[in-house]
Image (tube, rainbow, N blue to C red; front, side, top):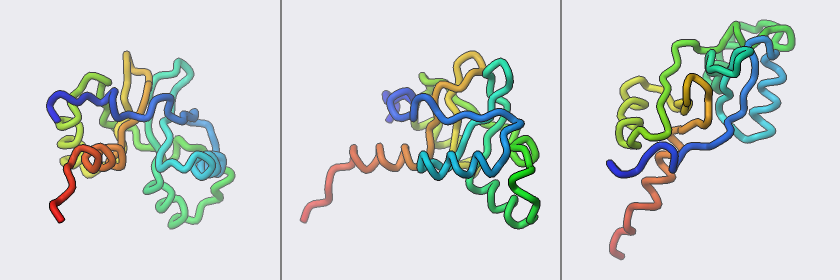
Length: 133
């Protein structure tokens, strides 16, 4: 996997929202796109945070009016990122060490994609040769 880079596995053009976007709208977007996270970008298009399905567990648990709560209340701001040229093996190790499932791919601070543990599992399943019968 040393010669496989993030650019080959990432989902390009990730779904983005602003910190002011209401969480109900984000939930609907995530459902519509069948995704587990959205990237939060500032007015300059730079990565400001990430909101994942795990964050929605907290939202529901706290029973705040979801339609009146902006994303900025729940997004993670200490986000691990990668570049499109980082080897996949390094990214996989960083995801495991941090215990996270989504890593934005950035170029000069702007998100250009996202790589997830699902992307990594799909890649590994296609490169593994089947077991002998």
